[in-house]
Length: 346
Image (cartoon, rainbow, N blue to C red; front, side, top):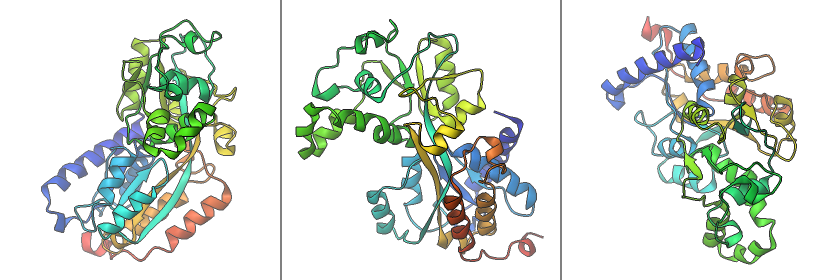
């Protein structure tokens, strides 16, 4: 972690500790949760924002994963619930319905940039190039509804290394895991004619196409990308699944694996040429903007930092195209006013 993010982490920790000692009714600091991929960018913005507005309390920023973060965000309206949720995938219809069921009905969705799901290995490992089909056949508990028999990569394809299949990846509910399902596993699975008949049985289709093997070939590394990297150093023949931004921040320590012959780079992710490209978001409650001092200014600062050469681009965020950035900035400026803050904290 660089000095900027370390400083932000310290600020967030202090704020989180003070937050835990407050009652929900007293909270006037910004509270963000969600995606581990978006977390470093929100953390960096929190540090910059607090430095520019020292009279405001430091924002609380936590990393719990996209699915868990959305669940917390949708839990209700009030100071005990997050104001912002970071997400490495769009919010699903059932999650929107859950929000509405708990009174969270006025949400702004802001796309902050692009990211890719990077498949990585140790630079000391034999080079490998993969396809979605090979990844699915290696990781599925029941590839195409059949018994999983592959132990080594060469069992999937003779051109692949004679190495055990060992992949460190994100847990279910994590945005990177969900995106892997949607961008890699499901397209590869449903392209096979043996799966066509399963589409009428959604539960069975989901099980065949997305349930990962539980025999140790796929290891749930949790939300901690650094843990995945350390695991790969200990097991240099292993493969890790991470957000592209983490790969970029650890150049030299990790080697990207081409997917369909294309390496993840800022250019291939932004253009969509890289198969596992995805948008990144954060969602904000308009009711929180009207209640939490400085929240509108924070969102505006975030939206202003996502362009090429901007504060977050310098920290690894891949900018979205100009039309998307314009929409994000328009949404940020259309948010209702926050309560007066400086006089209150003077």
